[in-house]
Length: 362
Image (cartoon, rainbow, N blue to C red):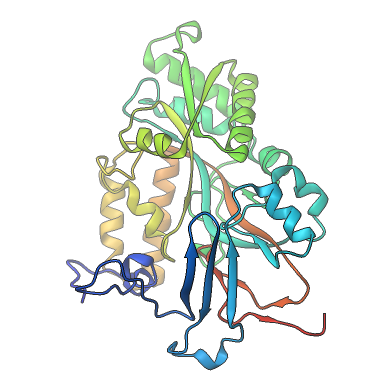
């Protein structure tokens, strides 16, 4: 039973998130399921086996009796096993494809837009990113199109918006022009003047990211772009994900790279993180009274044009003050064997097999 303390137009979307899944009230260490499959076997670091749930409300529509999920830590090994017909499906968020194989797989890869964004976040309480013009300079200097087409190559879409289109009824918003070098240099000079320093006095900055092949390549590309656009050399620091996340949550950084995937199907999952500066999910430490008021007012409306307009206004204000610099929106990319049919990827990136079946005609 959930008691709401204020109007929450997206509450039904929240109920599909895992924190609302049922758990036994008085029993510990018991895994239960009300989904299309139930856990049959789990050998840590090896495999998970799930079987059709006979008590599922629509069990007669579930065609697959058993799914064997192999736990494979190396992306190249997973692709090798797929090519050797030992795996039927790989990709998405559960099994990333190896970056160096993407170009050769282009004709076979399938993709689906999902509610995820990659961005650069600025610590607005740490010099020099206390200055909005400095933040804008670094954001305008990013060549997002080059990054998505030549560096990432994971089906991602270059963007200057925070909210993925899939959370805005497919509307793709662009708040400023990509790779605006003239504008970047103009704001950099304005920022230096407002801070009372020269370019030579600009501090040495460390750019943080978590240690993955994809994020390492992205941070190297950004380092190069910022040097070419602004003449500023940035040091890179790649950390294990947990350590990186702790730095962001404690705001112990200057600027950093991060990705978010929406936990429920509503723009508030992204926008709400910036409601208060002391939130652990608001890595930037940015707060704006008008912005917070817009989010508060939006809760008074159901999913309507009035609410959408308030949220659009809030995103516009957020991007204008630039506590973050959006880079790209996610596409889930995957490979499946021809006999695998009707696997669905949800807007939140979940891979769903409830309507899947294996064709005997392939």
